[in-house]
Length: 347
Image (cartoon, rainbow, N blue to C red):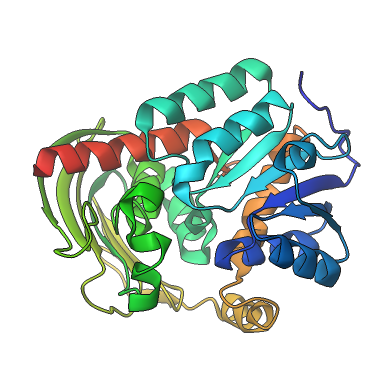
């Protein structure tokens, strides 16, 4: 049964996982209006106790009792991908709304099943695709929705930065835990943005993958040419082989203009076919990111915007106009399917 939350009630959240992204999620909850971090759980009891003491919240050393707490409205899952399926299932069975880090799961069939289960229970299952809430992505989405430059024709997009050897020697480079390399990790974000901008990807015309010679089933490079249901073309590249600046670049071609967005730093270039180039630099987001980074490295405004959008859905507030919504479980499942399809097409 759905755990109903009146609109004026503060949402109580349980955080599972206190690694790098878990720490960012925890701080984002603590800094966001209408949220309260009530407890945390981590496989490392010392880390659980340490962070609970720092954040002044409850620490749990038994997962089932943590998720089953009556005062918990939302479960935030910030653990490695291989654990997502079981944790999402447990949270839904306990009547909790869920925000799970990407990838929702690395198994498309399981992801769709869990998304459908959440809907049947009247619960919200959201996928942590916070890139949707980057400043330039929000503005680009509004331009597309308002048909400012007519029909979208093509998108060329790249994402990725070279991980440290330490990260690759941990769970990130272990297929049994991560479920894949750059395509699964950073690529999931990019695929979600492509879905956001151009609709569902229906056709993969070409795909190529380079495999890590020392890490089975881990791809440091992937490239694909695809087409959407509306016949919009896109070229996707995911790259861990080189350190790029910026980390994310998307070029969108329309009938009467073009957009180029990037992160980091955030930037949006707007070029009408017969007009002057305009550039937005998002200085306030840059300043806020520096301030938030003092709380937790990598903490930035998109994570808090994502929580706000999630809260709006939980309390039943409808989005306004071209407002970007939280990525649903179905969005996470579709991204997982495209990752799987690209892998299959490349073999």
